[in-house]
Image (tube, rainbow, N blue to C red):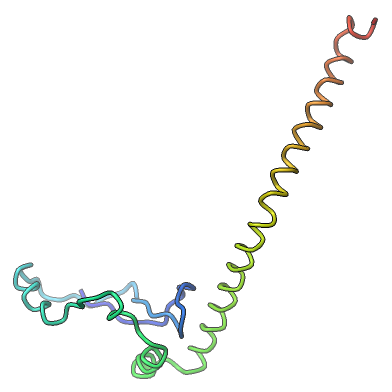
Length: 129
């Protein structure tokens, strides 16, 4: 199968618009796995960082496939917004985590007190004393 390259939506992309593949595909003729592997040998990447596209490579790739520059910028802005939201979540998690623990303990204490008071009201023996 051959999948078309499209403008993606992955906010973990650090530089430029994210690259993705479409759901639809072009069917390719079947091929023996050993033949395929031999054909791919020359195209294999020795290291993972060889598979990373620079900002300019991404922009050029999208220009070649006909994606408007403005569309790339729009997606970059959307991804930047999501990245900032995630960064804020990490910061607030460190602040709110301990506060949430204190709030949960206070909530349990208050419920415990009300539970005791309700038990006294419902139990006539405790009301006589």
